[in-house]
Image 1: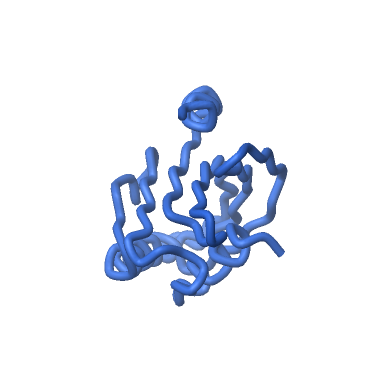
Image 2: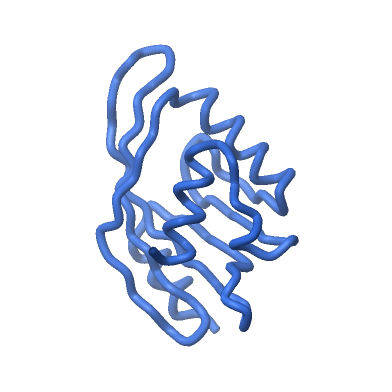
Length: 124
C-alpha cells in the first residue's frame, strides 16, 4: 500500500503514523469545517480532534492516483457520519502529496475543487 494511503488510514483511525512523514509534515486543508494548516504531530492531532467533533465515523477509498517526480495526486472519497445527526455523507477530495528523497511525505494539500487541485499538482 502506498505511503499516502497508509498515512490516511492512520490519521482517520486517530493515531497518525509519524514514521511515514517528516517531523515537520504540513497538512493544509483548503475547504470545509477543518480548513486550515496543521504542522507536525501536534497539528495533526488538532486536525483529528476537530474532525471527530463533527464526524463520529469515517472511512475512505481511493478513486485514482496520478504520479509526478516528487508528488502524487490521490483522489479519495471519504464516507462519514455526523456525530449529532447520524447523517451519512461522502466527501470527495484530492490530496496533493509531496515526498522527500527518503520516501516520507513532507506535505499534503487537500482540495474539494478539481481545478485548484490540478493547479497545485502542476505547480513546481
